[in-house]
Length: 325
Image 1 (cartoon, rainbow, N blue to C red):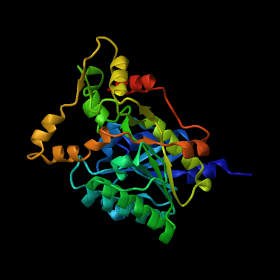
Image 2 (image 1 turned 180 degrees about the vertical axis):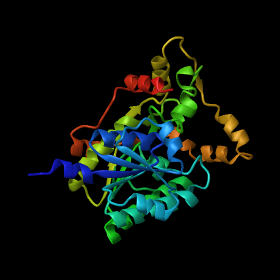
Image 3 (image 1 turned 90 degrees about the horizontal axis):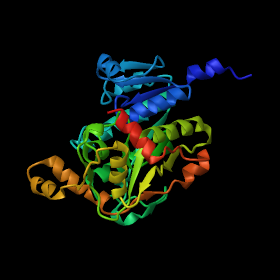
Image 4 (image 1 turned 135 degrees about the vertical axis):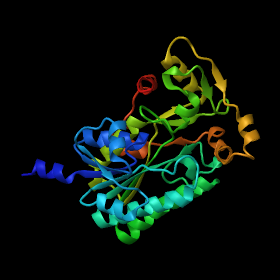
């Protein structure tokens, strides 16, 4: 007979980035699936005030750049959710690579599988319009090269040290509690108090979006199927493919309700003018191609594994997102 209580005790996950949009969503999803969560943060008291987790999450003091802290926090865990990124666009490689190296070392020591959110930075503009798990990764930007290197680190760790990983690749994020993304910062800045809606895309070009609770649920369901996964597994999450891309701005305006906000085009010309003086704007220009070409994620492998991809209708997802602002 299976000891259910024993199983629950061993279903412990370490979440790095639990105060962020994706990390928080994955933590909630794992809790709903019966996992107990540890979350590493520099300030546990502040993190507890900022979030709404129940008693199945324990905050642990530490920094993701501190290898010893990550290793200690990961002891006796079965999952390490690596949902951390360098803030803004600064020091991307100098911070991202060491943080992942620390997660890999901790996973090697604990035997945990790493859950890693992937994105489309890995691909060049000509890779689409439909991206599968086998599409060649030929990055054309500095951040894309870093993301390719990070996924290569995971494959190498699996081959050489038996460190298991799961990459779930998705488009741009949106969802409750997530404000460091294009949707919250550009498309509907201010949330339900937005006075206008902005379309950053090229006319007629589709764009991939991922509603965070859906993506987090996919992560949790895949974690429940750990025994069926390859050592270095990759899935693509289809999410909401909005074609043409302006459809997201139109859907956001509808979800906000009256009075109808005007839809404006993103002022790329001002980004170009300011780029020589502001590094952040130069980084935005480097990634602009993601709004100029269609890069849709083929989720057939994920659907074959799960039966269906977790999916909330777009209008409902947007209403839930705005309700949290």
